[in-house]
Image (tube, rainbow, N blue to C red; front, side, top):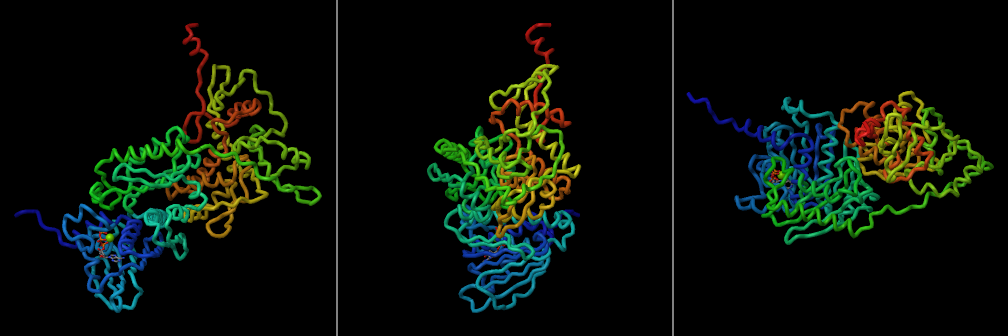
Length: 600
Ligand SMILES: Nc1ncnc2c1ncn2[C@@H]1O[C@H](COP(=O)(O)OP(=O)(O)OP(=O)(O)O)[C@@H](O)[C@H]1O
Ligand SMILES: [Mg+2]
């Protein structure tokens, strides 16, 4: 007797559901796409427990006729395609007629809808594939879909879900991607009753990007546009100095659809090569438009990838478009005059803010406080002297050394700076070439780590707290990790909307503006996998602080600064590599030199 048999429909459907619904983020994406296909002006999304408990999407689009409700949640039923040829020029986000059926198979789905022509609306409930009756209901124009308790009946799938915060972060990313692709629709996102995004309908892409990531970031982006025949690309890209730690701010869209594409991102990397610090990522938002027959969107079960008929044309278009933009733009960072020193008078009785002392054994100039943050009991005259000093134009550059001269560097360790980035040191063993940024980063990191561990981190209260406008998603990150930030010396307080104020920073962070530090930290924390313990979080914050506060390649250093840095590598234990694992120095032994010059 044969052993092959046809699977019951319920099993077929559940297998199909596995391809469409991976986690709450997939539900958010599918429901948003359905809502967008209905031509709405507004969509409201609410989630509970990261979307595991509930995903609700409400739109004011065309709605569904009562007699179509059963079909809407049935497999292979769609209003968007009729014949196979329609697949050649898909104009909607949906086309398979699969999403609602798949979701209904693995959750409890309530669908309510009313069209403009129907006198009343109707609803249907499907629970784990069990379809209920269509019930007339008075409801607003448009459609509401609620997905309750995802995978409640499918323990094997539920086991693969991560904790609510992780699922939330994936789900909100899905919202962000879709919202970026459709700026003309007003959209909101709430989580556990709290409004996270409130996006107005915008006719400019920059407005939508600003709504999601903060207007300050959006305003700095460069506009790019180019076309090659019928293929065109438009977008907003970051200046090289606005680089970020991860790829979170790289978004590609084709005909209203977010997609991933390694080849195009490679072209982006190529365009930025040489103008971006290694290991950093550019910000890019690119929209492609091309005739439907030149792109196949039906190649990935969750429609995350697309296939282009001529991928190399897109590669060249992106590369040349960005390169041309960089050639014609002035990418130099403008010199901004240092902020005014607030009036300070001993008579007014404003005592210098106390800074807790920390003895790290580091050179005095590390962590010189900003001139605007008079923290040491300097005489007023000394502070006034500082106002006349023009040096701190170089933001990351340590200020002048006001404390006692460092101990003499041993004669065997004379050092010189080359190309404003390498320090060449004569050591007892030979010659050491030091990467000044990598070493300083390591030294700062070790010092920060040691003082946090010892509980005596020197914290600098800011005389003028610095407001920082964050994207709502970044605000979440900051709020969630406020404790880790505070342990690392960055104290953050809410300031209304998605703006926070930074009220203190670690003294070791030196002149680096609090905003720069906070943005770096947020990027890295957001990129960190969920489930990181508090120690890892603090460590990540310290890494970010050290990276941002360290002197950069290209900064000329004075001889005392060079000597101090060279000497401090002996203070920290592991200075051979920067916290990212790059070497901080290369050594050429005397023996090797002698051998090369045939002296032995
Ligand atoms: N928010 C909505 N507004 C109006 N109609 C909707 C909405 N959601 C679903 N529908 C209707 O239900 C049908 C089935 O939706 P479903 O998402 O399952 O399939 P699809 O969107 O056609 O294709 P895909 O599986 O690729 O998403 C749609 O074709 C559409 O007619
Ligand atoms: Mg759909």
